[in-house]
Length: 160
Length: 160
Image 1: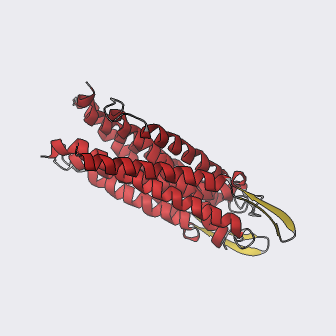
Image 2: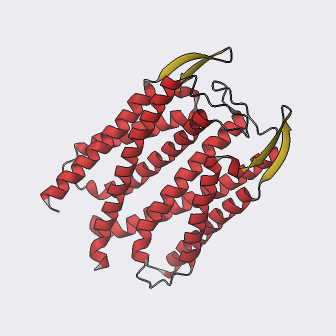
C-alpha cells in the first residue's frame, strides 16, 4: 500500500472518530426547559430511548476510533479490523436511523397518531439534535467507505 | 467448502429471504380504522415515513435474497456478494431501527414530548407491526452472521 493511500485512510479514520465524538458531545450537552401547553417540558436526550441508544452507540464508535488511531501500522490486529468495522458500522447506522426517526417526529409530528411536533417549543434542543445527527452521519459514511474499501482490498487479488 | 456447509449457508439465505418477504407482506397488509379521542384514526404503514422506509428496505432485501437463491454456486458473481451483503445489511439494520423507534413510541408513548401511546386503540395494527419487526430482525441477524462468516472465510488464509 502506498504512503499516500495510508495517509488518506488515517485521515478518514481521524475524521470518523471526530464525527462520533462530536455527535456524543453535542447530544449530551443539549438540554432545554420550556412550557408546552401549560406543562413544563424539559428536553433531554435521556427522555428518549432512541436518543440514549444514539449516545451509547456513538460513544462505542468514538472509543473504537480513538484506539485505532494508536494501533501501529504493522500490528496483526489490523486483520480483525474489517470484522469489527462491520459491527461498528451496524451499530452506527442503526442508532442513527432510530434517532433520525424520533427527530423527524419531533420536527414534523405525526398527524395520524396525534403526535404534535415539539421542535417549535424546544428549538435549541432540536438544533443540538440536528448537529449531532449530522456529525454521526459523516462518521457513518466514512466507516461505510472504509469497510467497502477493506473488502475491496481483500477481495481484489481473488478477482484477477 | 464442504457440501454440508454449503447446504447450511443456502438454508440460511432462504430463511433470510423468507424473513424479509414476510416482513413486507405483514406490514403492507396491516390496516386498521378506529376512533381516538373522537377523531377517526386510520392506521396504515404509509402514515409513517419510518414504516414506509422499512417496507422499501425489506423489499430490496427480499428481491436481493430471491435473486441469490438462483445464482449458480460456481458463478463469479459470488465474489461481489460480500460487498452487496454489506449494503443490504446496512439497509436492513437502519430500516429496522427506524421502524422500531416509531413502534416503541406507538406502544409506550413519550411523556416528555406529550406523545400518547396509540397501540391500545389500534392493537391489531400494532400486532402486525410487531410481527413484521420480528421477521425483519431474524433476516437481519442471519445476514449479519453470513457477512461475518464471509469475511472470516476470506480473511482466514491471511490469519494463519
